[in-house]
Length: 164
Image (tube, rainbow, N blue to C red; front, side, top):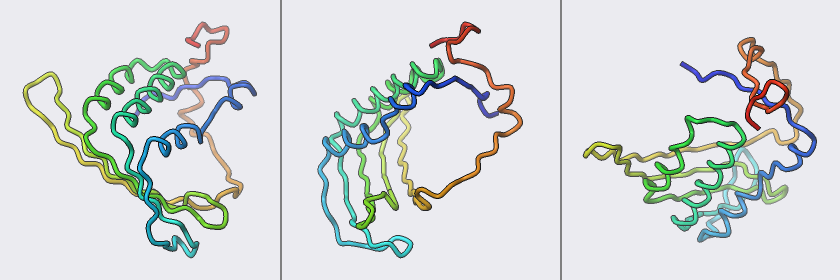
């Protein structure tokens, strides 16, 4: 079952405070970055960067980001995520393809190894690999709100008394 839809009104100040590049820059600053041979992605000439973050700094970034997301959404279900991730990540490597002309990320791959030990004596090893491709930067899109989102629970801290 999918989690319920949540809504919160955002002010102009809220939108301005959304820093999408800050965490990315912090990640790069705590990583060993190696320039690999150039490649093309969907016909676009790209720099290829291999990124190996410092594990402790990466855990710290995840912890900080998760705490911020928790505060913004009021989501109690997220409260254990930082601790689980902080203790379990043992290796992470990333590769990014950056367009030479516009400097946009065109493709990203990551491999993350984790060892999770729930409250039992058993241990679960997890290896996550993912690939993302990015395209159509600055192309207008049409977004249609799904019908089930119409009845979203308000968590915005307005007059209904939701958390802020």
